[in-house]
Length: 374
Image 1 (cartoon, rainbow, N blue to C red):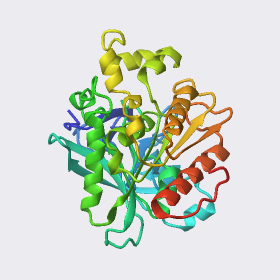
Image 2: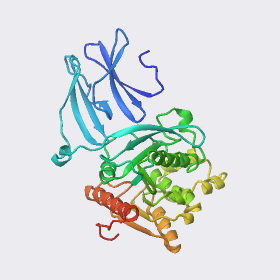
Image 3: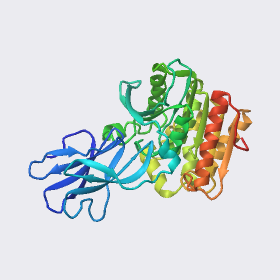
Image 4: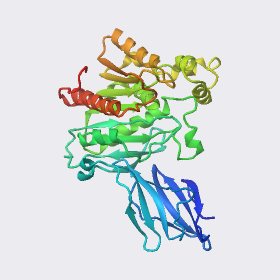
């Protein structure tokens, strides 16, 4: 046995000389690359920067002489690039440089892995980003970033969205609540028929964590996420309206029952695996849908949505906007033509980040907006 760990391990390949082999470990949202000696079974972690490190190359990551490896590296503050790792001297050299010059000239805040206890004693892991040179005076804004899925994991991937928020002064925390992958099957199944229940409480515990740091103003906490993260954003402002100062949701779900009628068949089967049969479990579908609670919300909400989303159709966003406008709440929406589930066009990616920043700046920091139509 080479590995004996609670973390996810992924096999690589054998070296051409047959003396070694590779594998990776996903430990708490950070991936490390390992090289193992076949004779002894001992493994050594490659000396690479913090982030997501993996093996590349086809058909193998090894050089023909078995003395070098081609690896990939990215982190939330560094775009993905290829590196060459010299096995003999244990040194890595960056091979490609995908970032533009202005990004390489300015250091960006890295992620930190943090842990905290939730309402029932479960330990929750999260990635935390803290802007440089903050005063610890309880005056700073913070944002909770729920991830998509829910069967997924927030890992330390390159994120222009996070870097835009952090470099504008927002502390950001991205929890991996119950239902996330990467922490064992029991933890992954802990949100069964309880979407927006225990996992939402895990997100709220993240709020308590950042408030306890001494950096954050409790009246300046917002939330934003896409897909299931958008669902969680809607659940949060509906079920815990007094926690938040502002919210931005992207292509999120308001009603699981309407989702079943208009989303793609494969997603519907996934949904039924999480919530059960829609006829037999109608009350669960209602209890786990933001539409049941959304009229309780109190904070300004921005909705961003693709016009042609096959997974979370535009009608979900329209329901949110219509309900809140009838209630006289502060709500705005922007729909992106020819976009699906997520925004593929660079100009729309940039625009959505700017709109989110302007929204939080306006309603959490009292600044005027710079994007037209807000």
